Image (cartoon, rainbow, N blue to C red; front, top):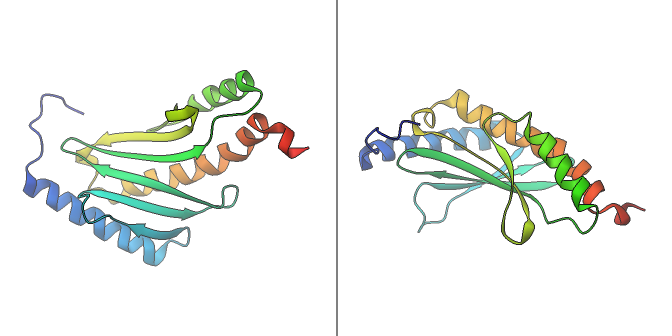
Length: 156
């Protein structure tokens, strides 16, 4: 992202928003893991994409288009109830292999997977496909192993 670049105009953001709307509509039609795409009327340029997983049955990725970036985030899991050091070490090691996203600790210790790209790439179908696919794969790869560490006693 070029911090010296002028922010997008309303017309430019509207065009990117329309492109993303169309891309998500196509995903809803053609991509079997995309279960729903929702928008709140009072929140412009924000999408909630519900995906159907296997390791984690359902999860939602929130996409936010801003003047210079497109950010995306999903809730992975709550804070661990045991084995905290091992749990966080595991997640930090997972962070090393990520491209365009990172694991983060949010409110109340919850774990999120989040990323951000320059808005110049937000109207690129290949980039949106990479983000959606990567977020899906990472949630599927990270959820169950982290759950088994941070909630080990529940797995007997």
